[in-house]
Length: 346
Image (cartoon, rainbow, N blue to C red; front, side, top):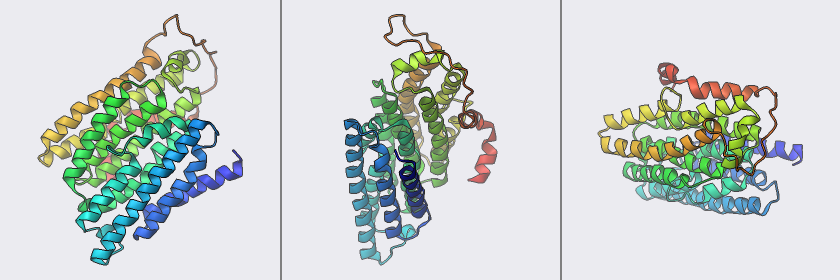
C-alpha cells in the first residue's frame, strides 16, 4: 500500500477515535465511529485476496447497521427527553437499542458472528487494530452511558460471550480465529462488571489490549498464522517463543501474571454486589478459553513437532527481539505486583 495512503488511514483512525471518546453529543460520537469504519476498510482489503474483500464487506455491513442503531437510539432518546447529551440517555427503549448497537460494534454474543470471519480475512497488523483500537470508542460510549444500561441484559450477554468465546475457540487451528474468540471471551468479562464498576471495565480493556498487542506483534514478527507453523517456529526465534508462552498464559488469566489482575478484581466486585453465582459461572466458563490458550502455549514451546510434519524446519535467525515486543511482554507478565498503584490510578 502507498505510504501516503496508509498515513491518511492511520491518521483518520486516530481522529475518529479521538472525536468519539471526547464528544458529549451523540451526533459527534456517531461521526467519529463512521470515520473509524471508513478508515479501517482499506486496511482490511489491501491484499486484494477474495477473503480480504469478503471480510471488508462483512465488516462494512455490520458496522453500518450498528451505526444506524446508535443514531436511532440517540434520536429516540432526544425525541422523548429533549437531550442529545451522551450521559443523559434515560429512555429505556433507547438504552436497549444502544446496548444492541454497541454489542454489534464490539462483537458481543449474540452479534459475534462477523468478528472471527473478518479477523481471519485481515492481515495480522489490521487484526491487531480491529481487536484493540477499534474497540475503544464503543467501550467509551458504554462507559459514559453505564448508569442507564440494563444490568440483567449485560450480565446475560456477558455470560453467553464468555461461554461461546471459549467453546467455539476449542476447535480452531487458525491463530487469528483463536484470537477472535479470545477477544469475545474477554469482552464478556468487561460487560459483566460494566453496570457495577465501569472503571474495572476500562482497566480490563487496557490490560487486554496490552496482552493482545504483544501476541499479535510476536506472531507478526514470526510470520505465523496457523498452529502447524507455530509448532515449527521454535527453531527460528526461541526467545520470542518463550516470551509468547508467558504472554499467552497471562492472557489466560493465570496468577501471578498481569492477566490475573482484572479477573481477580471483577470476581471480587461481583461478590460484593451479591452476584456470587454469576461470578462462579463466568469463572468456570473461562476454563474453556484457558484450554485453547494452553494448547497455543503447548504448540509454542512445550512440544517438539512430530517427525511426520510437512513443514520444513525454519533457519535459526540471530535477529534481536524487537524492543517494543520486549517492553510489552515485560508489562504483560509483571504488572500484578503493581496492582495497588494501578488501582489508585483508575
